[in-house]
Every structure is written in C-alpha cells, then in structure tokens.
Amino acid sequence: MKQKLKQIIEQALQNACKNGKLPSAAFPDIVMEVPKTASHGDYASNVAMVSASIQKMAPRKIAEAIVSHIVDADHVIDRVEIAGPGFINFHICPDAWAEFLKPIHAQGCRYGAVNIGQGRKIQIEFVSSNPTGPLHVGHGRGAAVGDSVANILAFCGYDVQKEYYINDSGRQIQTLGRSVFLRCRELMGESVFFPEDCYQGDYIRDIARQILDQKGASLMDQSDEKAIMVCARYAAALILDDMKRDLESFGVTFDCWFSEQSLYDSGKVADVIEMYRNRGIVYEKDGALWFNTSAYGDEKDRVVVRQNGQTTYFASDIAYHYHKIERGFEQVIDVWGADHHGYIPRVAAAIEAGGYDRDRFHVILVQLVSLLRGGVPVAMSTRAGEFVTLKDVLHEVGKDAARFIFLTRSSDNTLDFDLEVAAQKTNDNPVYYVQYVHARICSIIRKHGEMPAADVSGAGTDASTVLLNTPDDIALIKLLMKYPEIIRLSAELMEPHRITFFLMELASAFHGYYNRQRVLTDDVLLTRARLYLMTAVRQVIANGLSLLGVTAPESM
RNA sequence: GCGCCUGUAGCUCAGCUGGAUAGAGCAACGGACUUCUAAUCCGUAGGUCGCAGGUUCGAAUCCUGCCAGGCGCGCCA
Image (cartoon, rainbow, N blue to C red; front, side):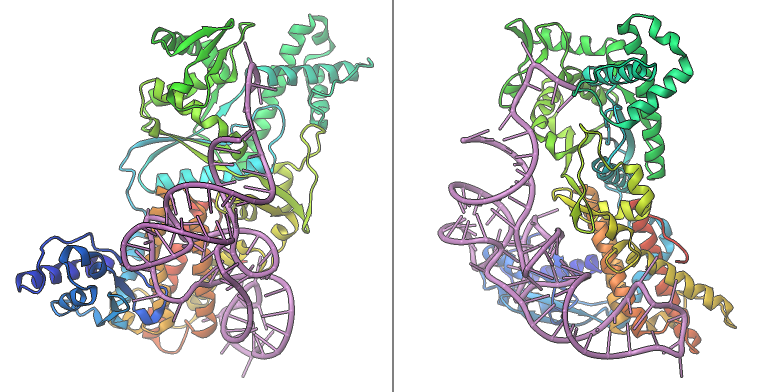
C-alpha cells in the first residue's frame, strides 16, 4: 500500500510540474508513514514540507498542487486531506485492505522474509562460555539473543553460521584441572587444602568422582602436573557436553564448536603474530611483545606475549577473529556480555591491522541479567559456587517462557528475570498471552471443522473478503501488513525484541477482536472471510514466535 | 579521570535512521463469561520524555554541556 501511494504521489508531482504548478522537477525521496492518530488518516506523507526549500513555496501550497494532480486508478483512496503544517493524509477505502491478506497466505511461513542478506555469508558467535562451570542465566540471555538474531538473519536471506568458541586453553582451564585434581585427592581420603581461587561448586566434586570411577586411582600415580592435565581435559569435556545438552533443551544448536586450543595446535596464533611482526604492527618492549592497537583507535597498546613467554588471551583472539574473516564471512558478529565492552576496540584494531574493514566486525552487547524470585534478588556468586544455572531456570519456567522473557527487553537494557513471574501462567507473563492467540485460532478452526458446510476452500478468492471492512478487521490487517517492516528492522539492527513487542501488540489486537467479533456465524460468506483473516493472524504469530525460538501451541 | 550502557506514568519498559494530541504491561479503581478457550476483553485515572542550551517548519528522537545510576578500564580470561 505504501508503495502504491508513493507511486501515486510521484506521478502527481510530475504532473503538477508539467502543468507548471510546481517550479522544480527535483523531488525528494517520498516518505510514507502510518500516523499515530487515526484522524490523520491511514497513511501520511511529509513530501510537501520536505520540498518547501527546493520549491521555494509554502508547504501547504505544494501539498495542494500535489493533491490536485493525484490519479487514483485502482480506487483505493477514500479521501485525501491536507493537514497541519502540510501533511498529506490518505484515507483508504475500507474495502481495499483485505487484498493484503493474500501475500500472507501465499507466502505462508516465508511471509515477512525480506531478502536483505542476498546469500551473503555471515557468522554469529555467542554464549562461548568457558567450559569451567555450568551455564547460568546470563548465558541464557546471550543464547536467546544470539540464536534469535541468527534465525532472523537466516530468514532474511543471509547464509548464517552459528559458532561457539571454546576457551579450552589458558589459565582457567588450568585452574579447573587443579580444582578437580584436589577434589580427587580429597575423595581418596587425603585431607587437602582447597584454595579460594579454585572452583568451589559442588559440580567439581561430581566430576572428580566420575573421573576416579573411570580412570581409577592410578590416575594419581603419575606426576601432579600430568594428573592435573588429565583432570582438566576430562572435566572440560564433561562440562562442555553438559552445556551442549542444556543449550539443546533451550532450543539452541551450533553449526560449529571452535576450539581455542586448535589455534595453537595448528600454529595459527604463531603465524598471525609473525605476520603482524613482519609488518611492524607488533613490537617488543620491556621483554614483552606488544600489539600497536593504539594506532587503530584503542586507548593504549596491548600485550600479546608476556615477559614469561606465555601468550595472552588477546593473542589467540587476534588469530581467532582474523581467521573468522579468512574463512570467508563477510560479516562477523560476536554477542558479548556488556562487561566486556572495553575489549571491542582492541579486537576491532586487530581486524583493521589485518587489512580488513573494521565494519566487518560487529559486537552485540547484552546487558546483565538480575535473577529475582518474587521481587527478591537471588544471591549469586560464581566464586562461592552458588548460582542458579540455566538448567535450573529451564526446569522451573520452561523453554518458551525463558526465551520469550529474555527477548522482552532491548539488549542495551539490564533485565530483571523473576522466576516466580516467569513460571506463572497469568497475564503477568507475556509468553502465554501471545501463545494463547495461536491456540485460540486453532481452536476456532477445530470448532469450524465440526460445523456443517465447513468449507473454506474458496476463502480469499471470492468477494467475501470485502466483508472484512469493520474497524476491527482493518486494524488487524494493518498490523499484519506491518510485520515485514518489523522483520527488516530487527534484522538490520539485530534487535529481536522488536519482534517480541510486535507480537504482543498483535496479540492484544487479536484478543480485542475475539471479544468483540464472532468468527463462526450463520453467515457462510462472513465466516469464510473471517477465517481467512484468522489464519493469516495465526500464520504471522507462528512466524514471529519461530524466529524467537518459541513454540506456537495448537491448544493450551 | 577515561570509555560503554541507561534515565520516558507509582513500578517494569517500548518508541529514539526527526513528524501532528508520547504508548504498552503491571499496580489502583469500575465493569463484561447461557455464544468460537476469562491464560481474555472494555472503561477510568495516571507524564516538566533527567536538566540546560543548540540545530529546524517540527526534537523523547540529532548535536554540545551538565546531573544521576549500572558496567568496565591487568603482562586475567
């Protein structure tokens, strides 16, 4: 409809110009928007105001010139008004709307897919939690956002790869090994001192028990260093398996699990450092090797190889991100907790120093989650091993509620996750409000199937859709027409919460409709038309929910 | 001190690639189930869009400064 009106205005501008009513043939891009207030029409354009400086005319005069040259061949326009400072307001014929249900039925589960990716390869890396402990709520938010963004981008024509980066190298893994090792000795009856910097959680004991069962006490016969190494590998693998299971029950899967250690094993870290060294980007100072990140906008240079010869985490991250782009991704997206934001400039610097445009690297920062129960904060301390895991949350509130709630805020905002509210099946909980729409429509259709003469095969093809012309019908249709635009925005901005809010808005419109209008009536044509509308609503709800990774139940 | 995020109704937040009278949910109050699922709906009430300037036909939205809160500023990961 917007497109149609744009063309009509464009034509009117040209005609007006030809007839000498407008001095200049230079026209701006025509913007057509939906006014907030119904009395301002169904669509409004500000062309006249924007053209004022070009045409050297008063906006209202320009608007008059445009309006008087409008040709409405298809008779979609009921009336046109000039309002306020020079808005041109279009009121659409009530009968013209139902037309726009056709693409929804024609495209089905593809409705809303705007092809902005055009097959371009894009990678999104998320969660990437260290395999040293279970996933907690914060990871859940990252997982929900990352997975949903991946869904949206794939839906919009990108060739998306989802990746999990496994930090299976470095000090934290060492610490993990030491923690398990000490618990093993403890289980064998030794009294050991368990340092504070080791992982305190009970899961360490469980792992120790498993490893002793599996490998036997002879594990401890080798040198401590070797035993710790074995413990570290074993524990990391176990924790990783656990994470995979948790993520799967959260509806999240990855195309690639990328090991940090593999970057060292294949010599990629050394190679990349060598390359940068040859190009003078990396230099030695104070016995350490530094990366010249400040030349690329970082606040200071960063160490890559420490005085003691060990590489820093940044070293492998340089190699990792460099190779991501080498793997052929046009864009590389990282989903990070907001506490890592200070790390962005140096990774961007590394990419730019590698000869790539820094815009190819994008970080979605996700703010903290505070866990509450009935409004009271739940104490969480990784150090003390007290935390509510993602698994616990899933068990308590379920996948759909968890995913939906994680996406009810912009990532830029911190999120209070209240376990009590999330578990409630009341209107405090927006998931069910949206899912209920789907269930209700399915129920209507089931009921209709039990009715005599339950044939809807002609729906949408006969004149019956003209009956969809009440304000309630039109309001719903207009919302459905908005959906592709919502999808485009959420893809471009990588903001899944836009879909969440849209679905709540659509749900609200539907429930209102349901309470005021009847779908199944004695009037066969009307019933057919309304079923046609209802199935379109159901389709859009299902499409949106699927992008969020939430199921659309047929009954509740 | 520097950087990032936030500041909109009593609470939690949308809106912020500029548009007309700023929205939703919750909480409060009052209503609606013999009819397709009341996990629903309708109505009432509620606002100096943190503050001050600037840009322009027009600012919650863009720019600058300030104030407040959160997070981060390692040869940790």
